[in-house]
Amino acid sequence: MQNALPGKVVIVTGASSGIGLETARAFAQRGAIVVPASRRSNPPCDVTKDEDVQRLVSSTVAQHGRIDILVNNAGIGMRAAVADAPMSDVRYLMEVNFFGALRCIQAVLPVMKQQRTGQIVNVGSVLSLLATPRQSAYCASKFALRALTDALRLEVARDGIDVILIMPGYTDTPFFDNMYRYGGPPRITSLRGQHPAKVAAAIVRACERRQREVVLTFYGRLGTFMKRFFPRLLDWALIRTHHQV
Ligand SMILES: NC(=O)c1ccc[n+]([C@@H]2O[C@H](COP(=O)([O-])OP(=O)(O)OC[C@H]3O[C@@H](n4cnc5c(N)ncnc54)[C@H](OP(=O)(O)O)[C@@H]3O)[C@@H](O)[C@H]2O)c1
Image 1: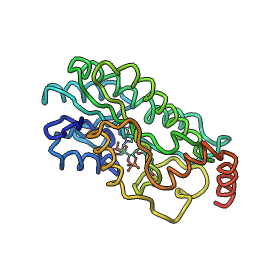
Image 2: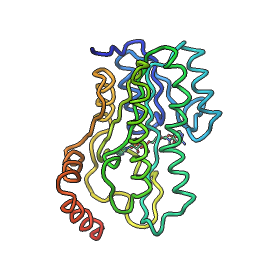
Image 3: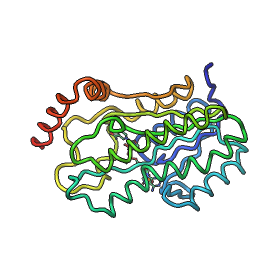
Image 4: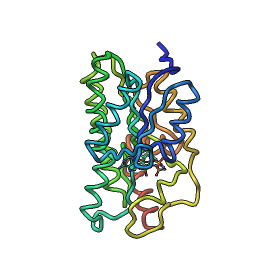
């Protein structure tokens, strides 16, 4: 059955930029009430801080009476070889990309369980399914997010809560300018990637259609197909690219 969005209360983390900003717009266009949550939101919400996330959830419930959808989108990137990735930066990346999502999930679950309805959307990546050179920490955070998503889906299956994983491929956002970088250019190609509005549309559609998982972009789908059926060929292609940039 189609899930209608008008009037739904939707928290979007990382809504100040890129995919999160477009997602907040797309939900608002469907008549949803959007609560943006990022460090640049007013009030600020840093997903690495327990008190910020608790305040986000309690103020949303106080103001709107419920939380229908949580989109865990806040995230940062890192380009560094395993040998060079500073441990403190890897820890912080995990704190945002994995623990930040977990923190938000733990905060909204009691509300959604009491309502006996809700949707949790985690923004993973094609790199939730395959790992690329110089992105080990980022890939690890997105693999971990996929595992969390899969386990949670089973745990809340009888609570009326949908758990959805969106796995975008290369998307044109400030992500690449914001990422931690130790050697090499921010982008490994001169192409700009898909517009973030495409990811936003996929997130909205996944909520409406109660989809389980979505992989985005042609190359994203090609990569996951190759990882599954031709893993050595994919390794060869990735090693070749790695040594060209
Ligand atoms: N761009 C791509 O090619 C691509 C591909 C696959 C998946 N993704 C994923 O898509 C998501 C969004 O990325 P994007 O491409 O839209 O990048 P972006 O434009 O850099 O946006 C990242 C967002 O995360 C927020 N954020 C960062 N640290 C935060 C923190 N500690 N607390 C709260 N919010 C925080 C930022 O807001 P503030 O600075 O205001 O806090 C910003 O709104 C990420 O999870 C990323 O891994 C991106």
